[in-house]
Length: 183
Image 1: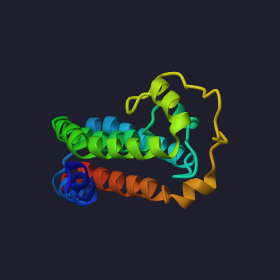
Image 2: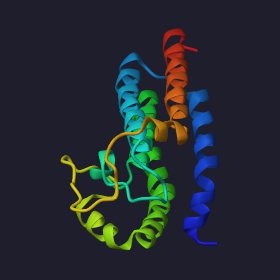
Image 3: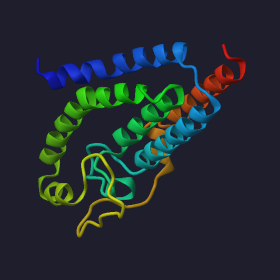
């Protein structure tokens, strides 16, 4: 089994384990909660935006957030994790970065190979113009695209991204409770 396959299998269980541990031990302050909560909210919005633009394995998504980064769902997840880490203690951000480098980077590499195989003609230009992770400030406009271009609420719902928004609300509620009560 390759490291990439191990990382794929560990991604969700480790994420849940770290999340539960975080909820037990997080002790945010009003300032860290405000800063981290805002960053995490931006991540939720990025993920929502991305999920409304992607038809997985059907067409190459190059519009919306996909015109800024090839992996907006992962970038949004990173912002969510980074924001919640900052809410508890800035040092946890180092753990988030390590987690993404060790677990998500191999996943992105594997997916890149898959997408390149599915859309060989369009993917080369896309890779040449759109960064893999950190978004470019201005959107790239594909000269030829199968991508329809607009946000689809149906896709957002189909991908179940509302669960990320609900989770955000629950976690923020818990962190506010911890901040106010000192529990």
